[in-house]
Length: 73
Image 1 (tube, one colour):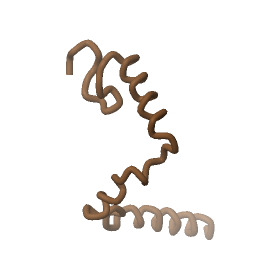
Image 2 (cartoon, helix red, strand yellow; image 1 turned 90 degrees about the vertical axis):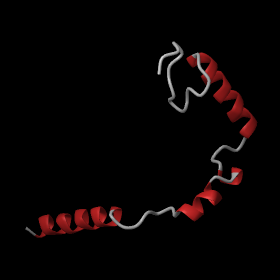
Image 3 (cartoon, rainbow, N blue to C red; image 1 turned 60 degrees about the horizontal axis):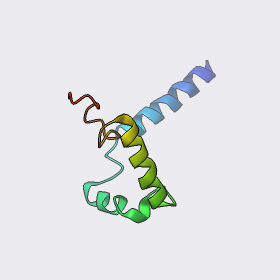
Image 4 (cartoon, rainbow, N blue to C red; image 1 turned 180 degrees about the horizontal axis):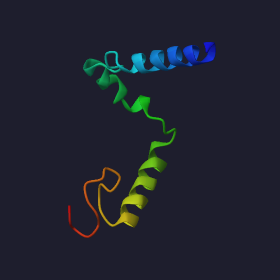
């Protein structure tokens, strides 16, 4: 019985934490978009790998999910 109550309290705490205000405020997004915040240590190799991926998929912007290489959206 105690274990169920403890689990219920923990789950309620986790779910309650997700319902609060957004973690990243609109004025903080500019800081996160800074190139220094990138997770890649080598931006040139990241750019080359992205280019290879886009060529392999047959369309520019394939990583964004705008459409396939067949021309249909």
